[in-house]
Image (cartoon, rainbow, N blue to C red; front, side, top):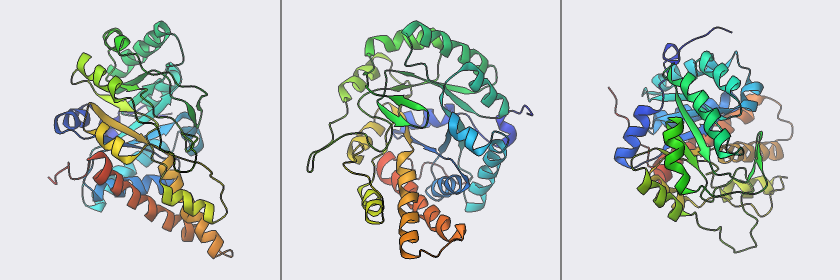
Length: 328
């Protein structure tokens, strides 16, 4: 595969995004995508709301889309933002990279940011693998995210039955030994749409803001990342269940908790499940109401519109990233 620098695709790394987010106290949205319609919706939603955006793919999403397609899709995303009316900054990020080899492949293909996730390994092994990725990435001006602590839940190839909170006392040492650019922490979020098993009327447990505040005091100004931060929108869950789905007792992270996090040292919030739910809800509704429909444009188009609306809502009402980019 051809080696290319991300600037050839019109992309940026996350340094300037995070610096602005830290200074202005908002969080950059990091939306995962698996196909063209999701990518279009994310870019249009962010361009319309004047928000920077990080486009994320996991290793399995990269395999599904096709590694040869991704650089061209990223370049098209940059052009789509311009055509929509505002050339917002766009980063292409590897989510939960599992190995140095995968991170290197993505960097060589034109990714502007990568995550190496060795959080399930020992502290020493996590440091060693992260440092190896950082050295290669920084030589190519690519930013690197890593993780301390383990999030529970299942999403793509990421799976953990139990969570372990990030230990603030390990953070400073980890950053010094790795040179990583941002750090994902575990404070009570979890992967997937089934984050909490709640009884009717029961509220999700609050995030551990005490851990976040302790980390913020230890490493002031350092970019913190929240994974597993979908809210599992009740309206979309209800629509899915109404039209033949089965998603019982689902619950996500309340938006007010995410708003509080976005106003702190958290400058990147990952959202995946909410986008899947938005599109699935609309597609199920169309199939139920129009069982004879077989033109993908007639159900993927409305699903894309629903995702655009969700992205604009998240940017403006939850993350505070809307209106941060001015037309040049």
